[in-house]
Image 1 (cartoon, one colour):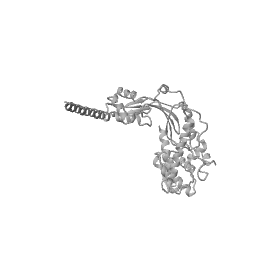
Image 2 (cartoon, helix red, strand yellow; image 1 turned 120 degrees about the vertical axis):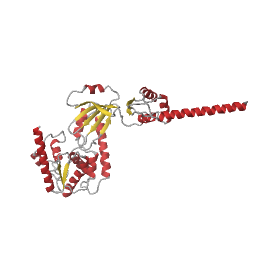
Image 3 (spheres, one colour; image 1 turned 45 degrees about the horizontal axis):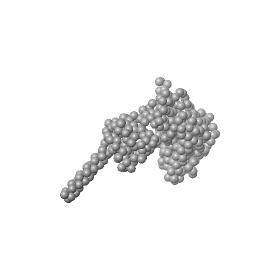
Image 4 (cartoon, helix red, strand yellow; image 1 turned 90 degrees about the vertical axis):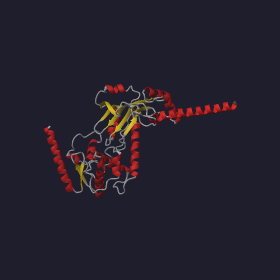
Length: 388
């Protein structure tokens, strides 16, 4: 009798083990299998949100088929405590495993609404945009110059959204004065700008910020990034450059930045200026003269006058030898890299080609011929503008 009972108990135990194994296998399959979402959605994780609350929200939005399996899977993979605050794009068909990874990976939010202060060479504007999950494209809701007029109602209404993200984007080639003035216009930043940072010291990049962030602290972050970029590239510089310090390299980089907006041209433009310095020639570049006129405070908005081209200022490279005393803008990483590792050419001249780029020349005769072609292009452009 006892033998029969023991046999039956063992059989029952084995059946239970098999059943448990089956349930675990089924749960695992549910966790890693494609999910039920037919279209991408935005998922918001509040600060301090529990995994239970997030799993219920996911189930309510149809992103997961079973909130319990989602929680068990997250706990089993040691990610249950790793939820990151923010709004995240969950793609169609994402598995529970993939969703857990998205919500715990960290980094910048990838969904929802965003305010971006864009500081450019000519303008500083605030843009409100929202990500459309279905297309993964941002839809612009409002765009305005904060110093020029009334705030759009869409922007004012968006301020009540606790999930609203903020960003400051600094374009390559802006001056430090333009950055400082742009930050002053951002109503979502706090603190004061005590002084305009040194020219060239700020990294033109995109910065994710929080509402009320201190302006001085943000400028310090920009400066720290530029310091790191310059230090890294200076350590890998080419030999035989005609400047001896990182500060001189930054001056050259700022000139390159202002001379061309074509990324592939930076190395050639750099080579022209390096070749000129090595040959004892003057740089003769208009952007330095313009900086001497404007002091970096805005755009000149007209052509240079002959008196300005002849005037003896520290920034008139038609008059002075060598480099001007400071950078003339904040160069981006690629222009700094070009200054420190220019292309190997024997070019000494360049002029606009009418398409946004430049034609390079080795001799003055070649250059004069290229200039004549550019004058013809300019005359034709003026004729067409007059006809319109």
